[in-house]
Length: 351
Image (cartoon, rainbow, N blue to C red; front, top):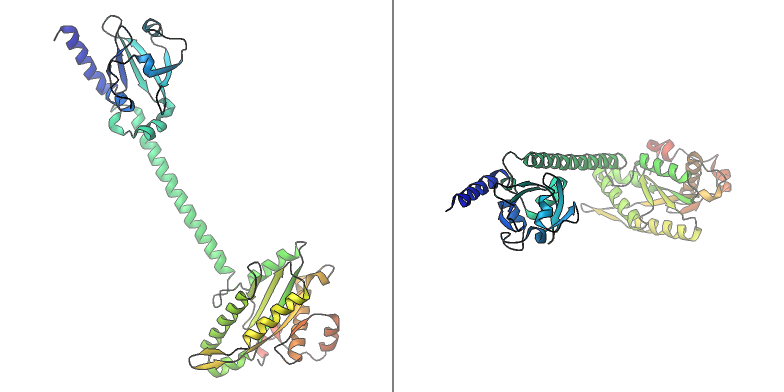
C-alpha cells in the first residue's frame, strides 16, 4: 500500500466516525469514499465510483457542473438533495482534501432531520456520538411522549367531565333526563323560534303498586314505563322524570294535534298492559295533559307547566287513562274543584 493510499484509508476511517455523512471526491468529481450513514441513505446501490453531481442535485449555489466549479465554492454552505426519491433536503460544506484536487464534503439534514429519520429509519448509531442531532432527537421524542400523555390525559378528563355532566342530567333509576335537564331543554326551546309541545304524564294507580308489592316493584314499573316512552318517541324528543311517577315529554317542532293525540293514546294503551314482577301483575295507567307553545304569544315555563297541569287534571277527572289538550275552558271548570296533585302535593296523591 502506498503512503498516499494508506493516508487516505486512515482519513476515511476517521471521517466515518466523526462525519458518517461525508463523501470524498477525486479530481474528476467522482465519489472515492462515502460515510456509512450517507451510503445507507442512497438506495440505488454503491455510491463509490459515481459522479457526485449525478447523485446530488445542487440547489444553491446554482450553475455548478464541474469539479473545478465545485472546488470554487469551498467553505460555502451548500443546499442539495438526492436526485432519487425521497429527495430529502440536505446541507453541506466542502473542504479541499489532503491530496491534489481532492475534496471532502460533509453533509447533514439540517431542518429536514425529522423527515430523514422517518424516511430512512435512522437511529442514534447513524450519527456521530457528539452530533447534537442525537440530543435533539431525544428532546423531540420526549416532547412527543409528553404531548401524547397530555393528550391522553385531556381526553380522559373530557370524558370524565362529560360523564359527570351526563350523570347530573340523568335520572339514575330510569336513565331518562331529570328535572334539571328538562328545565335546561325547556329554557333552550323557549329561547328559540321553534314551536314545540309539552306533555305532562302522571301514572294512575302507581301508589297502589308501591303499597301492595313494595318499592322494588314500583322501581321495576318506572323502568318499564321509561322504556315504553323512549320507544314511542323520536330521538329528538326529550323525556324526563320530574317526580316519583311524573314525567314531562317535550316534542320540538311538533304541534299537530292529531299526531300528538296518537302518541299520547299509544303510550296510554301500552301502559295499561299489566307489567309482570316476581309472579305478580302490576296494573297502572296514565293520564296526560298537553300544551302547545304556539298557543301563546310569549310562553313561559311557569305558564306552560301550570296549563299542562290543568289539562292533566282534566284527564284524571274524565276517568283517568285519558289525554287532554289545554284550553282555557278547562281552567274555568277545574279551578274550584281541583285537589292537590302533581308537583304541588306529590305526597298527597292517592294514585
